[in-house]
Amino acid sequence: MPPIIKISDAKDYVGQVVTVRGWLKRKTGKGKINFLRVRDGSGIFQAVAFRPNLGDEKFAKVKSLTTESSIILTGEIKADERAPGVPGGYEMDIQEIEIVQLAEPYPIAPKEHGVEFLLDNRHLWLRSDRQWAIQRVRATVIRAIRDWLDEHDFLNVDTPILTPAAGEGTTTLFEIDYHGQPAYLAQTGQLYNEANIFAFGKVYCFGPTFRAEKSKTRRHLQEFWMVEPEIAFCHLDELLEIEEQFVSYIVQRTLAERADELKLLGRDTSKLENVTPPFPRLRYDDAVDMINEAAAAGVTVPPKDEPLTPIEWGDDFGAPHETYIASQFDRPVFVTHYPTAAKAFYMEPDPDRPEVCLSADLLAPEGYGEITGGSERMSDPEKLLAAIHAQGLPEEAFDWYLDLRKYGSAPHSGFGLGVERTVAWITGIKSVREAIAFPRVLGRINP
Ligand code: 4AD
Ligand code: MG
Image (cartoon, rainbow, N blue to C red):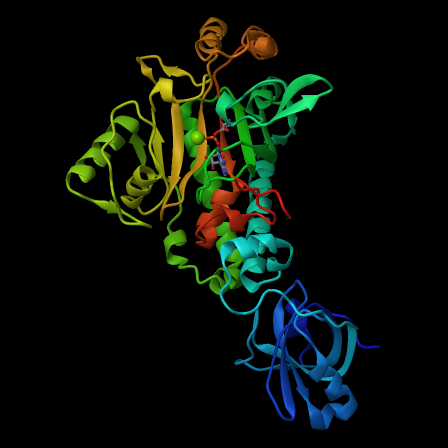
């Protein structure tokens, strides 16, 4: 029996007869020869059916194949530089074919489909070359995240999904019924991370988070994955050093391990190669000036070439503002010291200037917007209680969080990195909805 191999290992079997199990993506050719583009999950290659070699009966089987039929092919692996595929350069000369299932007419044709149609068929759309490449990049991004944190002494301590109170503002809460009591899907694991650092020093949580975002944008999902590192005895400047090391590692590791996938996606990787520390740091005040100068000069912003609108000190940035700021740098840029009133209740105000806080958002280049948000946390229990009241949050739900400031309080900092935005940026795709297998976007829960 020939060995069963992965398409990605074809290079190790040149001249040998092997078996591959997979799915037919496309069949071309006519007369005596048919070319099958075959996928098995590990890679994509071409298998060649040549009638004189196969005989009429087996060749007829090949001819009967429909798109997405599941098949088992046996044949000889040949090296040929021109052979298409991923990684490419190897093809199979078919000797035997077994049809596991002859697929029904496949709803996704090679033509352009509307995105709503594709999202309705997300369970099938995932089989496309593009989606395959994107999910493989995502898996590498996730592995890089864990490896960097594990190797830098961060302990993975996961945090609850069912929570009693808001962590990131009350306007994006998904409320659920917790046995007659209201509860909410976690918007963040951060508050629990803050408990965990006093036991473990440096921690991270990593899981799905939920935001009832009221609009459909290229950057927002209702359910997204976030990794949140948190560090005891850490100030903002040290936090930014950790973030730039971390983000650079993720990008460089993905470039090294997913070159084939990025090429398939047509990503211009030269833009990612310079993602190395240090990243530029810009204060919110200076970012506002930068935006207002550009707005006065009539600058427009992609993707729609909208004119940049001026902003007032204190406003949060819109997507075009972030895009413009990021476009001024060749790598991600930190915007620090946002207005305290515009940010979450737990951020530490700047001691010299309490109207701004010790916060930082990291803006990705090329219009991908904020990929991390972080800050130094308030460490004084009285100030924190006042901030909780000021935001109208229920004090009872934060008793335990206030305790953290009573028993060995210490300066501490952390950040959250959104996986889908990071993947969208690295892969160069337009929207975060393709960066997760089954996206939850406003107005859609299926499939
Ligand atoms: O800036 P955010 O809201 O920060 C927090 O949740 C903090 N508790 C994190 C922390 O300090 N531990 O979200 C962090 C990141 C954003 O920078 C963005 O990348 C991503 O999460 N994000 C979203 N991604 C997709 N869809 C959404 N609706 C997102 N909201 C935030
Ligand atoms: Mg944020």
